[in-house]
Length: 355
Ligand SMILES: [Mg+2]
Image (cartoon, rainbow, N blue to C red):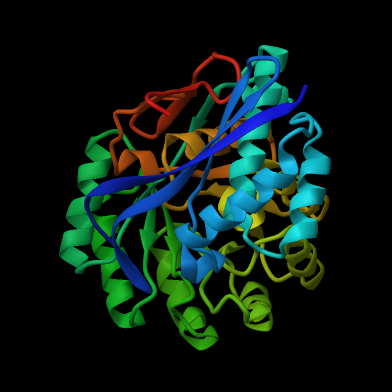
């Protein structure tokens, strides 16, 4: 099989309402949607959802780099995903979201060639998974009301964004627990917003409130801080912004600096490196979460397939499509509350109109 053409397009998606995390307020997102055509008539779709302050790239750089990749990748075999990554990594360091776009499209093609859904191509046998939904930072009262609203929509797992001052963060989490009751799983993501000391101060409160885990309490580069927290607290600690690539996973695992790692296709460069991060984590007895960035049904569904396939990915944070709507990219999965069932169509299972 040979790649005959590659097409890129900028796409805009708006959130249903503004979304606040520790270091930004987000109103919507733009992505680069990518299509790879082959000489066998199989087409694959991919997507880059860069987030400058996490991945270091943006949509403009994605489009430029994608044009450069296109020149080298046309004529290559899309099933030779290792070689495709070797070519891309040989051209540019970083630029993981654009690499993810090409990687996802190649996996879409490979699974379509096998005539199976992507989760089966990746070795899985169960199309069902359950995602959390993320609650942005606001006053304790507003966050508690948001949480109750999502619980009433059928979501059993909520990921709470914290990371401002710990006194208010403690009030937030207590108000939320009071609102949703004891039967909802609550996990916390501080998005680098706390110091080591602040984390050690708030952790007993989080524990008493029945929190499941703490994600990325300290700055991304503070590996020692992460380890200090992990060794001092009882709640599981998850590395997100500290863990981009398989190399980061190896470093964090060898430091014993976390209990779990949050894999995102946009941080690592696609499914192939994500599989390697999961392998590093699993071999070190660490669990994985699968998260997402600003991305549409294309990348988000690809991530769901990966999460469904891998037994060690036990926490799912693939909620972006619960917040935004898109009428020209459809299919992929159905959901009821946070319970997702992947489509049994070959590949990612999505349809793209007018592209
Ligand atoms: Mg996170």
